[in-house]
Image (cartoon, rainbow, N blue to C red; front, side, top):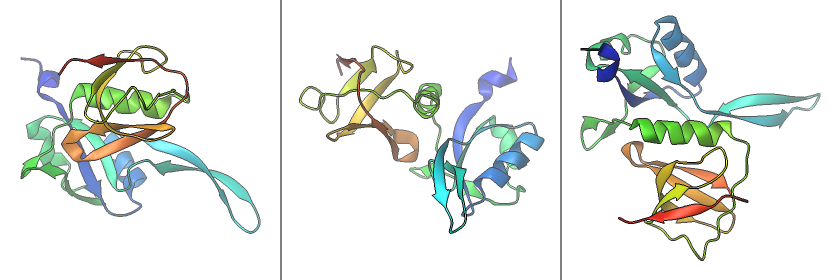
Length: 169
């Protein structure tokens, strides 16, 4: 049996502002990891600088098998695995792909809030997020919130040009 089939995505909780250090240590141990970042311009009194900031503070995502969990605990800055209903939360490949595509795309997607409502299952029909399915957790004037249920977070995506299909429940 292929060991990569046993691997599942999990979120790990880190000490504050240690996400990048934890990511580096995971990569040194050859553990597949993902840290979604956004670039912000920070201004000090003497200069401006672009800084990569984690989208979800104190979270790093790892793809590991149950046997590999023991390799995470000794990492400096690691606090614990994120749990859901007293179990280590498992994040589906679909949710991880959706998060990656949202983070990596700079494309703005348009949502007409009079069509989409909370709780609807949708599929994005165009743009770099084409084919992504998700549940609408909230619709604001210019944002759609895509729920990642396993960790209790939603990604807020600015919107301007995409088409959605509403999926039957």
